[in-house]
Length: 305
Figure 1 (cartoon, rainbow, N blue to C red):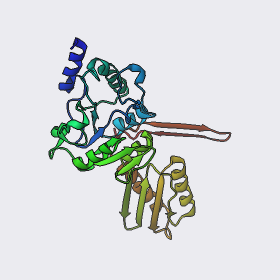
Figure 2 (cartoon, rainbow, N blue to C red; figure 1 turned 90 degrees about the horizontal axis):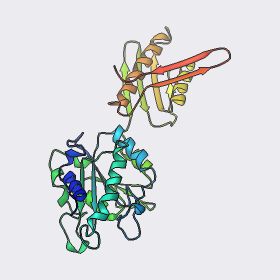
Figure 3 (tube, rainbow, N blue to C red; figure 1 turned 30 degrees about the vertical axis):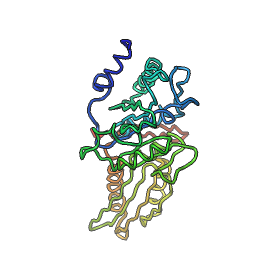
């Protein structure tokens, strides 16, 4: 065994030397390699750099998952006969290590990389869909019920079932056995991303308000404040922000509209803040629109500082 292979194997046994050593959360994204992160060749072995080809969109969308969620990333792969004459280690580690470095350069870091080297007929307890490789995670510390296994084979769906997790089957042909099916990494992102929705109610002596927001939907909601112009302005906020917004308000507009306007503004701000959650993945926003007779500027910093 040459020094390069020894070094890589030491890194696998001591993940803190190159990968994160501690979880960011107690939920896992267990991700298959061949056919999920990289395209799988006809002979099922990535034993040369020429065979290494990333799946479309994996860097963009898995990168967004890594930045915008707190899932702990785990790679789990069956590599039939790795280390034997039919699949020498020296041909495996070069492409594999290049894949890891490429993903790491985009902020995609795996806490653990699990590789089973057995052949299917050996019935190894570590081979997916069996759970032998996952002993570290089979305890109450990890929220497996809200974790996902992502893969392109039925065995990945079975692994999810054996772990008590949810499955995402990546294929052009959906599977009824999977919790979710996806044709692309963009669809996977939409499945696992935080659902940024919120409902806020506010009741005072002057107003009774209910507001619902969905920051990732542009579906038109119902807006009824009792003030036609205010309804129109709120509709424009939803339209230009690209969010789903529903507002109902019963206020003392027979006296004056200002309580309705003020309280809706407060409730809308609370709803957006609640929907943003811990604000992972969002940034500052700026927009300027010069026109013939006016100039409009918008600057938003939702960092909470």
